[in-house]
Image (cartoon, rainbow, N blue to C red; front, side, top):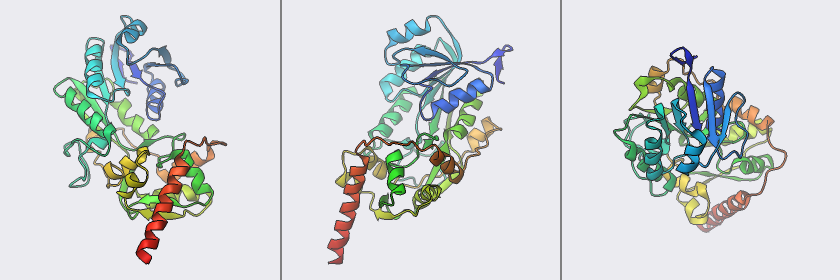
Length: 331
């Protein structure tokens, strides 16, 4: 158990109920920390944590909820642009010994010139992916401040499959329908279960050496995208029917689909990470969940009904465009 002055480490999570943050808050509590989760109260926080309800984007609401409380560490999962990142860092400067800003590994400049990616790999704006550009700008705004910056890559949990389209794509695989895969399906991609990411993040909390440092936290679970879809299909007991579509075709056929930008700006490129730095600061960091095992656990928790959010129609459109293009070139 990490401690200051023989007392449990006091940790505040802004968020704490999302895909990644739930596992982090849960592990913090299980490690003996005094954990507070602050958000709008729409989801149940992990067991063993204290819940505070406030609008994180409203400083007056934050102040009213926190009053004069101070924390040993504050972990912010909810800043997505430079203005908010700067405001939150200033707000918590006098309220915490350690402020942790959750960024994103999508800020590494694409295409990556050399693998594996390290914390010193160049970063930059990412025009096809506004989310990544905003996260990059947020990091730049925090430069020079005594802040710990953490960059997760593609992190999932049992309730959120790491496939473009999520559960709707899983259901499509289960029905035996064709799945469009970007490129030729052989680009390399790193997947990290949230429980494994939590090991690294929680291990940084309370460590004064982590102030002013940046960490990429991922597992070492690297697959081709064909393998990722095939593993899910095998967990479902079916055969994956994959069609390979040029990454640039996705935003042309489905410009309104979030993942179309991802195909060009992020997942269309290989991403393999060097995790030496986080292992140096957190010697116990040892990811355990390989995706083929996690996929079986995930499928076992598959929801009985998947709401139609339009993803299936988008995937139908992309597959139809693929077959239309094949006919043109075959003529």
